[in-house]
Length: 471
Image (cartoon, rainbow, N blue to C red; front, side, top):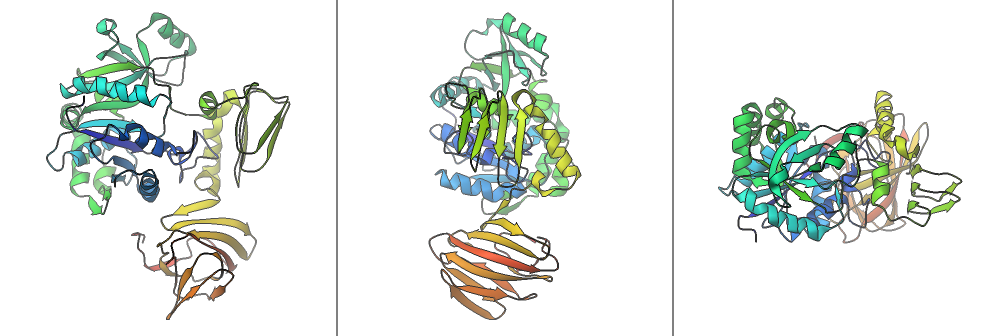
């Protein structure tokens, strides 16, 4: 039984490069339903919900704040405290900010720190492991969960455990970097080595004390950023100047490798960090030929391949390949070369192409828009507005817009006029007109927007009022 209060901390960072083109900077893998119906963030919460004594604390980037809030709401989670990082500074400061939030009211819970983009196939075994580790954490240990290795994997760091520890929580001998194949094979043959999962359990105060002892500069900068944070409902916006001055360091380097309080609990829970398309193939259900499919896929004379499709994709006479098809990009790769996908993203960024960061359908706090067609002086978008949501009061200097309602009810503000439109009705927004689109109904509002003008970029916008704090 857990004695101290258990506080889940969900780390929701990430650059969205390793599972491109499905995962992107603005919509990384934790927000995607890669395994099952839930997104990975939602699955992470459900995995720990039965143990939790408090709503989750989530550490995320500013640009992902509404995705986090909405997905956890859909998963039935109590309203989380969402700590927003103005810049990424790795896990040591992120966890420190979560610990400061957890102790702000004088409490001192056990922090169960979980990356929000991992797969754990055996949730019962995971929860049992948390219960086992809690006793050591209450006594002051900084516990990490070591994954019992199933192969000489070179893509993970390893933890060497004290040989005398048995099957329970035991002292960490050392952390080791990602090994080459021969070293990884030796680790398996020797025994006592476990994959580094990046999951932790410890008292909030204990972590802060060790961070202060080992890296006072990190804690001081995080404290300053937290003290000067702006609070907006469930959002805690860390001060940008103070947090940007914080050194970027992982918890492994900053604390776990330097403390004498590090302990490890070996676990066999069906864990995978889904760090590549080949890793996703590893955890997916496969047919008799070893093929894993998601979507409308036909495979003929093909083996050990993975295909993710929005439209029909046919594989013919191919082995060990990955094919991922989205609305605006297609990836075809050998399964043993998928780590190089990050090089594709680097090239896209170098060429300043939108596909590095955005999907064709772009999510916003109020809903989403999908650019379905465009030409030299026009663009057609499909817009969805959530019930009760509204876009900002805005104007454009170089484009006009026509709105045609497909379904739902639209409340339109156009200069001094306010009126409602229903299915098959339309209106025109001239260049320079102050306008706003709202959904006063209980169903999603869908409409087609046709833009026309000399310039159609998203930066041609002047906002006068905005419910979501955007400038």
